[in-house]
Length: 110
Image: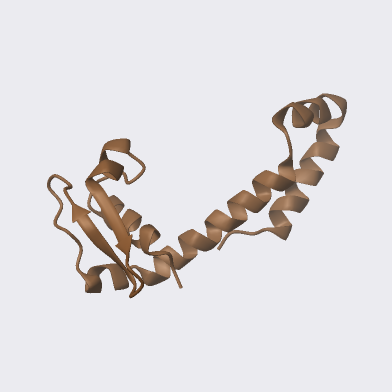
């Protein structure tokens, strides 16, 4: 099941807005009082507040996005520190490429 915030993010993007934009984060307040998440405040210029049906229609795409975010974080952790990677590249770029490819293969995106 997709995160509610991911569905809202995809809805914004489908309507030409970038959810990561700090101004947009201030204009959208998500709430969950125990009976499920909902949009508490929607003040996005030029975009109507999404309906439950519109957000539910994004379930599949949002699930893929959530899964890929987990994979991205797993990869990032496995890649290691950028300084160490640069040293590894300097010493043996082919070994570094093989290690990075193994990480990508083990953590393939959908």
